[in-house]
Length: 215
Length: 151
Image (cartoon, rainbow over all chains, first blue to last red; front, side, top):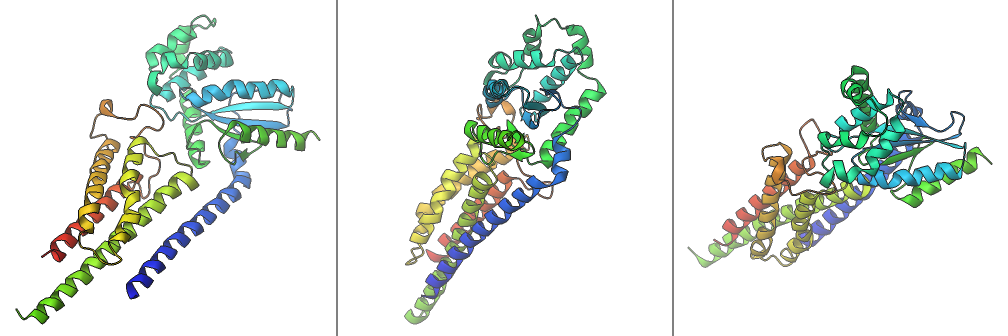
């Protein structure tokens, strides 16, 4: 019977350790989500932002242009903005987790220098299966998607490798890591992450923030 | 050899075998809970290769105790195949993360790329490495059990 006692004790200890670790992890996650330091990592001046500056609901999205789920969330977020005019602004941060995505991100940032950022982002997302077949972005295929937007593509090519763009991408990757962003898209609404991933969770988070900011 | 002495030696071997299999169960259960912690609590999505390794370690949590109560030396026969295959997948996975196997034969075309490390402790401990260590220890202990007890 000594064996049985040993076995049961071990099982109980392991399960208890799992439960304790879960509680600790979740409380730490909740703590850090309220920390002010987090806000500094989340909101950077360099991030492309759409929507009025005085909008009280600020959505920060960590995005990978090659990510299929980011592609399907994009129109969803856009609809939320349209449904609440003037109340929501959205900033894009980068989490280029796919191989070669950082290159695509840099191209996007280069189009921003010609004031065509959102057009380019939308064009790339719309044509995503064309330039990122099987989730592997092909840098060469990106250029064709940008034709017809009125961009000076030669200038884009040159500015893609500018040091300021490299710094932005590096900063975003570092911030994503510090904030514990491991998947894309990750949304923070006024600093709060989604409790779990999904369209409904994001809607709830945005609606709560709207109700709080515009009673 | 006197029958009594033979019996005592047998009992000692059985006792050792029980402890080794119990140790295997501890490792399998810790690994299972750890894997569940990564995916369910930390929300790190398991890649395809991780899933295959899970397939071979999760059942050990239930199979090994079946051989512990009462102790059945044959437990090795129905658990070692699982841990051996799981270990082979772990070897493949670790080689992949170190870039020793070229990307082109990577079986992950969707979801999480297997070659991307999601955690890194002390700069080198990744999830696939933890898995490989767990499978190696289980394989070794089960082999020792087999040779000690069946003799």
